[in-house]
Length: 77
Image 1: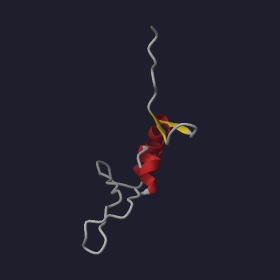
Image 2: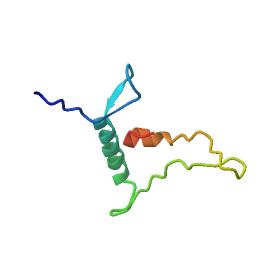
Image 3: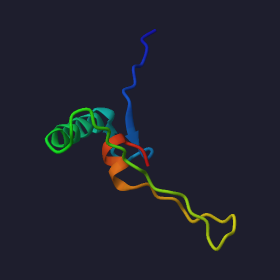
Image 4: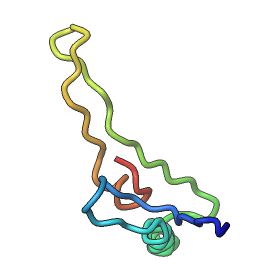
């Protein structure tokens, strides 16, 4: 029996565009190349994602939406 080898990808479900994980890897590599000339050697770049918030000191949280650059760089929402 032949084994199926699924490749890592981002997809929102059937009949939607499937984005291969290699695209996000390429985006991160391009980002690192652009940063090399702008930060000191050995520096660390921290990308902070969105923060969950509550409404009026209650336990109700509005729908969370991650920062769009996380999708671009890491393929996560």
